[in-house]
Image (cartoon, rainbow, N blue to C red; front, side, top):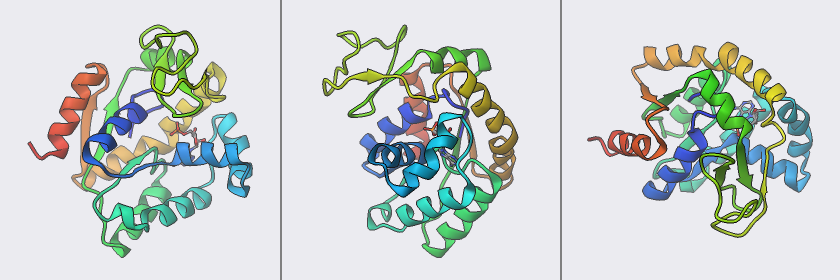
Length: 210
Ligand code: AMP
């Protein structure tokens, strides 16, 4: 959990590498479908580019199929899902059915001014998805991914207008989930300003049960 720019994707990539579990990012799945021009991609594209949420029935169906696969048996990391109360309720029902309950809802808190700075300067590798920032995480060669040599691009929804819409959806639809998970005793809150490395150490301590 956490607004756009809180660091969910960055931490998720580090966690799945360390714990060897699948990364279930609905945003990545939608972007992949758009790139491939599938029917799902065609539905998702207009919502995503304008910063709106993709309808619940589409998103829930996607996660349902993904969580039922065998590689989720040893654990999984959800990133960007659930984002609405109906999604959280559907997730609860589904995880009961397949007996793969979630252990924690991790919330990363970050002030709004910092989110805008991070998102507007964010660049991602078109090929491997590695994250960069024009000021704070520059690649060695301008515009080129250090890891795979792919081209660095700006996500179409990483502009100030779409970000304003995304932040208002976060406030209205996603923030109520913090209370939902707090009431279930699953919410763990972290400070998104401690730096990526420090945050990763704190998250690992939680996941390793320290
Ligand atoms: P993200 O990469 O998580 O920032 O997601 C990018 C965009 O994909 C969001 O702004 C939404 O348009 C869409 N999206 C991702 N996850 C969801 C979700 N759980 N529910 C609805 N829309 C989503």
